[in-house]
Length: 154
Image (cartoon, rainbow, N blue to C red; front, side, top):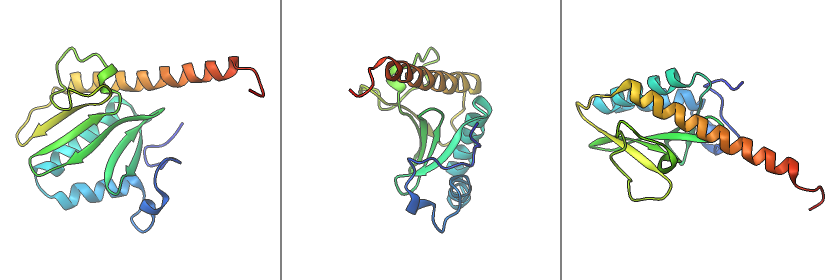
């Protein structure tokens, strides 16, 4: 079981140097924002951890918080007017509560833009996070099954 503070082999090792662990870097980002965006990012982070206690926090692409479990679940980007939660495989997820409100035209990703003062349907968001984790696990299990079936040496 991976701890939430672990960096994975996919993280850029240079980005971990001098800045602490990915979790510490996310803490620092929340602190440096110092406004509603920091509060929103902290809240989203808390909900992710509640939905998946085994989530791994990463720091990628020179400053983007990433949450993974058997692959990327989502990112937490901050802009001037929104905190964007982008689900790596969002187009493959059921969204019965219609949380996705951005990046809807793509074939892979989907995002939720949270503006200042936005309310979060915590139950629906946690369900979406759990669905993303389940999708990642099923993709990984299928890949393992395929690799076991393939003949050796080919």
